[in-house]
Length: 384
Image (tube, rainbow, N blue to C red):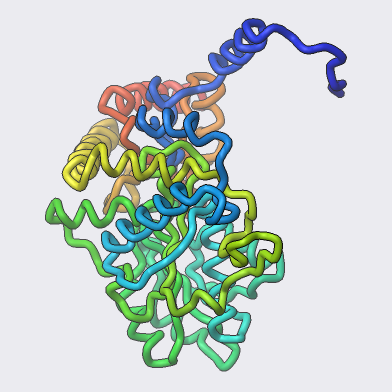
């Protein structure tokens, strides 16, 4: 139990406590954070946070320049994702965007049952628990991509829409969104795509010549996409985006009666202004070529990781399609906990694949891969 302090402390003393606490947690710079989809933010993004710390996007008529930048960023990312007449808002992250996407499908159709892959992010389950939608789960294939035939079998008169995932959390694979769009066209349904990671990765992979299935607004039946700048956009968390076709605006708006703007499109009302401006700064600092180079580096390290994992005698259960590599182990949750507790390495795991899950974000390099493999062998040797 902590009590509210009677007197304040000196700033220097407080900062010393904070710095000491920070040293006890891992950092991306150390190369020990290998299982999450955050990375080291761009220096410009951190500076923007300070400049816009006391600004919000609650009402576009208060901080008009900040709102203008948000519109500009949304337009740029919509263009990257094959869209025109696309609008949207920055959100607290992919979970909020996914909840809004589920809500959108319900509002368009007037129905409540949404079909999602079994690999869909747990934020959709949160949406169901909050009463926003009801879920029906479609089967996935051996690469954890949704099976279109399974989706079609679940469609009935109560179906509100379909959810697709562009880079799923477990395997880093992409659902066949184009095939889902054909089914949606046949049954007059719409699709929301969770592209929290893929939205800022797949377009640049395509520029590099990788074969990327269509997943974006170039498909007419895709009406909304969630994207996370705090993943591959080099922006500190939380920073997400909920993008949707403009014709939906009136259908999904929330009334905000005491703001001049009058309407909002997010669950949170008081939205910080710094995320879109930080992302705008990063986009302008790197340009398309900079993001392509960043993507190329991550793909190179991914290939290196896969090669070294197999050389050390471990199984990679699914061929990496993006920047996620799995390492087959028994009791992956326990192994991940031992790696953190004994070696200070944080890595994800997949119960579906019985594997550790390595996410090769921009801060992950070959040295980090070698450190992981050395520590993993020690952990497994200790268990025998």
